[in-house]
Length: 241
Image (tube, rainbow, N blue to C red; front, side, top):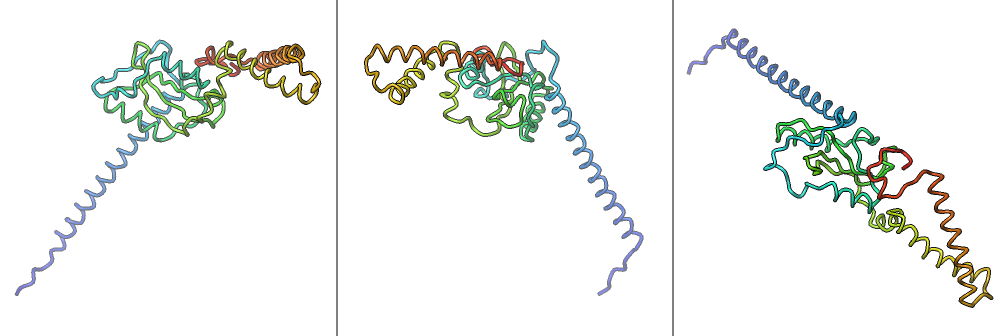
């Protein structure tokens, strides 16, 4: 049996072609990675810098949208007021966007062959000046006051937040809260300091003084810190609203 001789020239040519193919493959991978990096940097820039005013919609392909992610402005407003949240342009957002949110934007833009603009975020007020809060949600406008939920991250909202923020929802809630808080506080004051005052008329006197004191403290605190009710600050851009 004859053993075929090795043609070194052909071996060199084969090795060269293989290395060239691998080099082209590496160059292609590098090119794709650079494009992805540039694409993501552009998304981050559009989100962090905000967009020109007046842009109220994006060019979505409606057949590709998930109906469960479409919300009207009135629904967003109601949730923000109930849980004392803000709904603002992402240019006011001071936290870090997770990679998952950027990837979600990238996926939607490619699927819809569009460039999303005028992003909005739902988050607690402190998320727009600090870097830690719960449950931010990234939106893009569809048009006619409808918004599409792109991504949600962070921890779920604490179940007691609605109850804790209920007094700050509006003036009526604050007065009702102050009334019942004063009522309970009056019982405590009577039992500790005025245990001999057991008549209803005497208790009402204590209650009236307590109620006026609570209302005074609440409004002094609110005015001093420039606080506003949730119904008035859900889309406020001011730091101390």
